[in-house]
Image 1 (cartoon, rainbow, N blue to C red):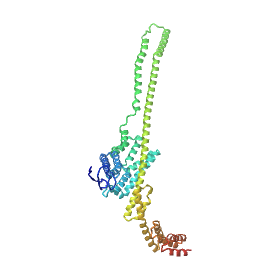
Image 2: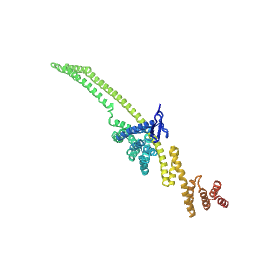
Image 3: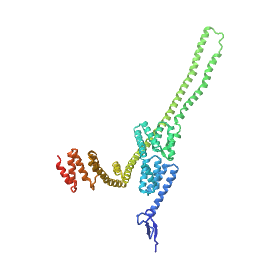
Image 4: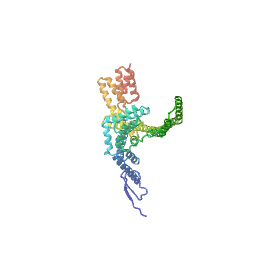
Length: 483
């Protein structure tokens, strides 16, 4: 059976491909599975398009998730990485934005817009320092929150927001502090400000629900109910009480008092008083007792309602405190991660700045940048650039310092020449062609300044380390003449 040869171009490297079948469509040049690579690229672009739509709709949180998914599928999706950096920048996460643009600049072509973003920050060092100050204040606020110093935390957060007005994490944290302090109006202003930046921010949406749609606590609804029941009880007991109090006295007042002697009148009066007290004991006193019992029962019911409402409200507060503690832990973890990322990014920026200085023929400034780098935090690619800059800059600095030190020595400025030549010696390498003469001049300066121990040490270094140097004979002569 005759099979036709199929030709196609690799979507990765552009190399030609030809095979007699399609069961194993592997590129002959870069070795990738071409259909699978094309599908992964298309899927990454699909997530990018979704992220772009969400970003245009100000739903930056959802856009960040889509763009992150796009980069997990294709880490060299330059458009997705640049847009992810812009989303981070829009929410005040400057360190993460710079990280994405640095990676994009390493992957992308010369017309990559990520390089323009980086140049904007490299040309404005004070701007980077301000953003770093904002992050420092935010991290300080987190520490104060751990120490329950909310007033100091609020001051730090306000400072961070003043420097970086779009710092969403700081805005959310300050809104949380206002909610805890009962300042819901101030919290609402901050929450609406966050949602104006990122409509999909989960923390801000939750705080919005807390500030603007919170229900009235049960205690406020139940507080009036016992009073109403108590009033009804009194009302039901007042009507028969008035009737029962009037009937006995009306019967007594209806009896005639004619034809009675004084003694009979006194006895009748005493008997009337006795009957009156008897009726009061039988009718009036129980009424008072019933009123007292009803009032006591009403107060007991009111107390039970208050206790139930308080228990429900306390339970809600405990749940809220637990949620806030979980959110605080999340903020702390996020801050630690961001600080770690910022330190790594700072090291990468120092290496890139050193490379930039070397390209502009400022090797001394390049080495100053490299001295501030923590090499343990560098990736393999950045570490390779670090080693290249150091190996290229050190000989240049050595030659410059040596020539300047020799000029100062010949002019008789021994103090300054000593400092300059010592810097030259620090930058000497194994391949240096000037090191022996640098040590010789340092020995001569030590002799002039009557520091003979140092002079002896320099001459011995020439003899031991540079036996083929033309300065060995002179060093031996000077060494033998030392006192």
